Length: 259
Ligand code: ADP
Image (tube, rainbow, N blue to C red; front, side):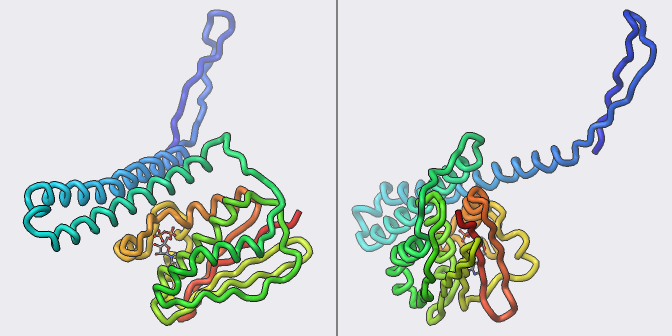
């Protein structure tokens, strides 16, 4: 993956020699491939719900709407479900593209991390009750104040808790624990679900990477949640890691710096 340029050496108008310039384009090719894969993925993800919405609308207009009210209800809820998927996908794509654009800046201010996590958990309470997964928020220590973009940092914990609830079967548990040291606040989100297979762990934060695409879609997933989470954490100068010891579910750990 090396391009060679030959540059003439000039003395006035006379060519006195040639210099070879080697340019390694391995990285450029890799980035180009990532970009192309991303566009292909977006197109595919958008096409599926649009095809479903179009198909069922046409069938309804073709006569089902007047002839069969029960099937109409069923078709309309499929249309609604896929519209919601489209809306979620567009909103996640916008978040990602915003954060990846060079002129993006965080709206930093003092944030009480404990209260933010509690709020994210409250937003998901109904979902966890409906799913039959217990949300367990451990004791929040004193001193969890950080400098952060409140809305974005809440999205981090919302997405991680939402995933825990999505992938943990009924009867299971999602736990959140917060620890505070002199320099950092560490938040651990663990669940009693199936966990993440070892070979998938290094890829889990990639855009559109899913262990089981059908399962993710069924749960209303876009495949972008963890990519967004990682972006936000990194923009805050923090770090995120994932671990999944066999039989122990998934464990996500977010470390954020104190001011
Ligand atoms: P999705 O919308 O598919 O959930 P994410 O980016 O949030 O997208 O997650 C990527 C993939 O990581 C998921 O499709 C799932 O395979 C896996 N994953 C994320 N969180 C968990 C978890 N708590 N337990 C098991 N698998 C998970």
